[in-house]
Image 1 (tube, rainbow, N blue to C red):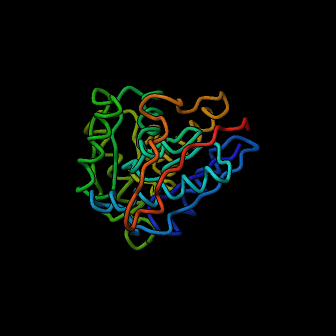
Image 2 (image 1 turned 90 degrees about the vertical axis):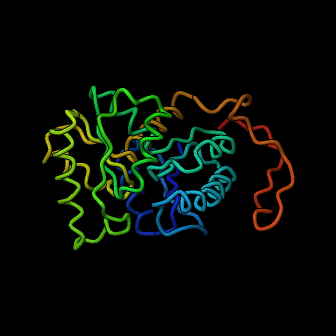
Length: 252
């Protein structure tokens, strides 16, 4: 089983972090690697940056398809390009927000999300609604620390995230906390120990879930909304993204 984590931003240190979190959650014998696009923003903290990140995500899925990757994790809490990636991939593709919310409802009744900047809260709430968890989500909160500052010990991110998770449990009545950024992955165990409730890292949750889907042979259908996109010309800077007719898959 070959699983690939795609960090939708272009910061190599975050790719390494996501890869470590995924490898720790993968089943024995699975090959897990982590990649990031050759183009796109250094971090994703706006709708504009999310839109710019999507071509790079699709670039990496296309490369993975040529290399025989069995399943993918999109390691950004906005789940950028998730639907489009599912149209390209023969195997399952999971976003970390989607996976984390599902996992949270399996170990508790109500969850709160703690994310980076306040300007991303709206996107997180939008995904809560899209994935059907409006009744289970007790709140979405920001620590007002930029994504790239999470790795800087001088930012106080560890302490700030821990304290905001603690407050979410008390103020929201949540019995699970979801970390709303792939850059928080290595804080998961510490925060859970300090706060006393399950804390879900979406990278780990998505890796475990995509491995399970691969293991039982579930993948996007050949028809319907996630069928391969129809071949047609693509012009200009995106000409390299022109989709060719899909060659029937051989069993792997």
